[in-house]
Length: 405
Image (cartoon, rainbow, N blue to C red; front, side):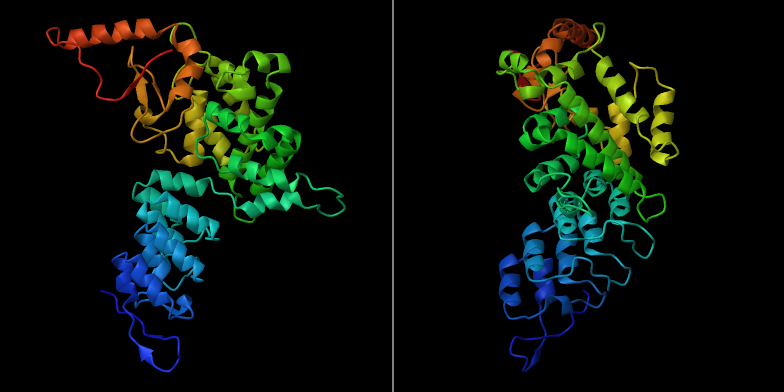
């Protein structure tokens, strides 16, 4: 066990050995809380390997412990560790997305490197925590958005009103980048809809800013993401239902973007492939203005050999480029409608078991198109089952199912 440094008690009269590191390792939150009450500065506490209390708590993925230590002034960018691991490195290794998000919101540097020149995101990818990689890749600090809520230079008015900043920030940090998922998010965010021209302008400015970042090559991932979000936001609001359409569709789950969502979900008659969605997303890739960027060339290369209607789909390529190639490869865990990946996996259609949805809203949104093929898919699945074992009776799926309405 690493040796614990001695710290002074609150009276500054004597030195005493503190077992607080052992308490953190045992994840005894209340014991640590009591111990911290007698200490003035947790920044002075570290073990013989240079690990701080916060680093130990982050490595164990203990959200409550991390929150408490941060509230007591722990340094989120502590770098005394013998191998230069930061709190975010340890949080990434823990696999706990909540702790990772907490470190990022506290100001952790996502580009910090350890002694082997690896960032927190790269360490998370190395140990297979791909959801953590996505969280780090998609993180944008609130201050980046708040910058545009204040007049700059000779401006008399800010680019976006302060009240709209939370809605834009929430849109920016979404990890699921499927256009239907984002449309559902936008439809419930009134400030995104009300101020959408300004929102698109700010997103495009952020895209330019990320490409011109001081790091070599800028931040191409966030540059493309902000471009992609601006492109889709403009599409959503241009396709926004008219008052007559909104009244007609008021009972639908897509809100004021019901018509746009139907366009995105409408499938090809023969196999249900969403051609409109595919062409729209390929257009979004083509519209990225930085033609020499590595991320654009990789996406073009992935899709250039693939005709529309075949895999990989543009949405898969986009999400893989932004979130990491391993984040969305498990199709068994993704909703057919919105692409959101959930664990346990989404519930399958009770009739055909060929499509799956994260909830009834997504099922209802897709039913207008799926009902044309549901019976045929059910017959195909039954024929395939009988071909494998003709004598075996039909068995209900082990997964929970949903019923078409």
